[in-house]
Image (cartoon, rainbow, N blue to C red):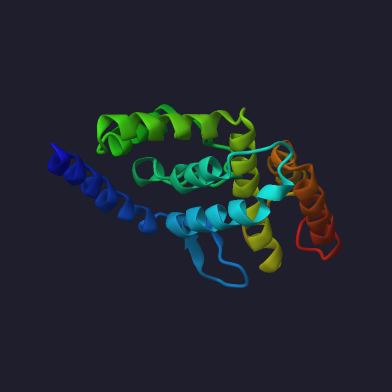
Length: 196
């Protein structure tokens, strides 16, 4: 029995290696290389550990780390959707749910159920942990675009208001981090790297 559980877990571990091949539109800080989903998830996990004290409410940091590490695994099947793409739904699509069931379903049943539940909690964005995790998810590309003189904002001609509207979700997880992020957005306008 234990051997079968281990084999299921190893199958999942092998499958999620594919996350390293999912390219995002956003480029690494001060770089012209696109980040992949695995790098993104790792960065969010470290950010959550470092910035947890700024959460609006007390949070289970380990749960936040778990959320950010698994939140994009569904993109192995569903692909990455650019945040500013107006043609596509950005969360909780049927395609993502099917991907979650297939990929997490490789795990033993108890773990599969747990991972799907955590993924759904992140997607819903209601709990303090999900709100903070989503703050991290919106902050990281903002830092990248700022460091890259506008990055994808410039590349895809994304206006200030659209960026602001997508980033203000940061405040639900941390008003302190949102104040910092908002200042960066305003500085981006002043520097001419984000059009108002």
